[in-house]
Structure formats: structure tokens, C-alpha cells
Image 1 (spheres, rainbow, N blue to C red):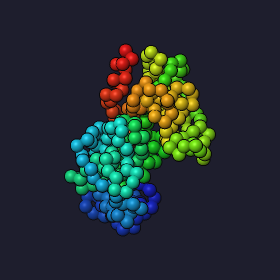
Image 2 (spheres, rainbow, N blue to C red):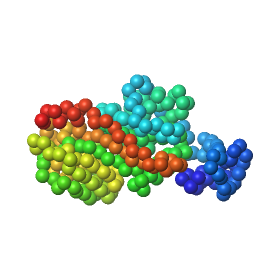
Image 3 (cartoon, rainbow, N blue to C red):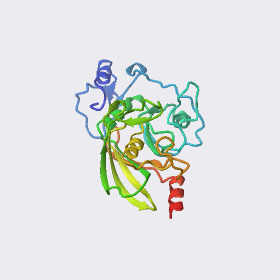
Image 4 (cartoon, helix red, strand yellow):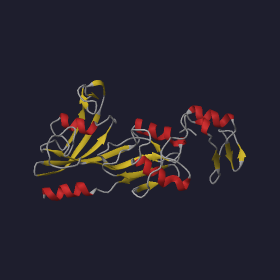
Length: 275
């Protein structure tokens, strides 16, 4: 119960919707090993209990990890995380909604990946764990590790980019260092290898600003390969940014789980061309 928002705990207590071995018990009741604890939730517990997600084909969904509370999907490069227009389908969340229909549940978005970014992304399977997972991201309990090919070599083996990011006043699609309404942004990286003028970097985020990795590496003179917004070279027809690994405490049990998304074909193809 300590992981739930205070208003939700109050609601469950007030309505006596917590049972231990089938009988009501107050939330300060001591439980023992093998006791069965049941919490009942109702739509009124949540501001937006049922997101309006139109199911699309589940054929393209690649599941990396799933339990009763959440699912980690291997997002395809080129798919949006969510639709931008009413009635639009084809986004990752639409495909996942079709996959979850057999469980009679819907996906709840926790964070986003840019359309051209591939890899691991978390969705909740019930609204109860949404505030828990969002808080875990905010408090840096969820560790997100990316891989990216960047232009140029000579970066320090380990480095941190600490530059504020805001909106670009000249292009609403883009973000800019010290742009409009800028906010702190911190990116850590480690150079894994250098090949023929390009570097493969492993990247961790302290913050989650829009286009953070792309803007930060552009700012230090090493834009991401294939970036249509921040790199004018044609070394790759697609963006080489991959959400490679997520490490997260599972809701309620707090067991630490590491989920890895396989290196995608467009990454492997780029490396082959360099070699």
C-alpha cells in the first residue's frame, strides 16, 4: 500500500476494499507469509480510468517482458508511441491494445520514445501501477540505457552532458539548447567503440526531455547518425538510436528486473557497412 498515492489508499480504506484471506482487515493489520491480500479498485479511483485506445493489429507486437502489472514492448523504428490525431491507428500503443484484448485490459502509457527510436518501452496494464511507475522514472529508480551511433570520434571514454533544453523558436518540431522554457537536462555516456569516423555510445539519462539525446550530442559536435532533424549528413537513411536496456523495480514486490531489447537490423547493417 505504501507505493500507492495517498488518495487511493484513503479510498480503499474508507470503502473497506482490502481483504486478507477473504475477510476485511484494516491496512495496519499484520499479515503473515502465504496470506492472500486482495485490493479492489473501481473506475472512480482514477482520473482517467479507461484510456481511449483503438486496437490495431497485434501481429507486430514484440513482447520483451510481461507480468500482471506491466509489459515491456520492443518498439519498432518508425512506429509512433501513441497516435497524434483522433481515430489514428498504427502506433505501438494501438498494437499493444489489440494484444491485450484477450486479457480484457488496455495499455497505459508511462513514457515515450521518438518515432524513429527503436527498443524497450514500458506500458502499464492497469491504472493502479501508473503513478508507481511514473514516480519510479521521476525518482531515477528506473534506469534507461540507450545505444547510439554518433558522428565523429575523439569523445572522452566517459562523459556527462549537462545543458538545458527548450523549444526551438524557429521550428516547432525541434528542441534547442537554452531554448524557450528550457529545463535542466543531464545525459551520461560511455564510448564503446570507434569505427571509421563514427562512435558507438552507451547512454543513460538522468532526465527525460524531448529529443534529449539527439539535442545533447548535436550540441557537442557529435550528432546522431541518421537524425533527420539534427544531422544533415546521409551516412544512414534511418536514425541510429535504440532503447537497449531497462532496469526497473517491479511494482509492489520491488524485485529488480533487467529487460534488454535485441540490437535491431538497421544497427547491425550500419556496422557491417563500416567494417
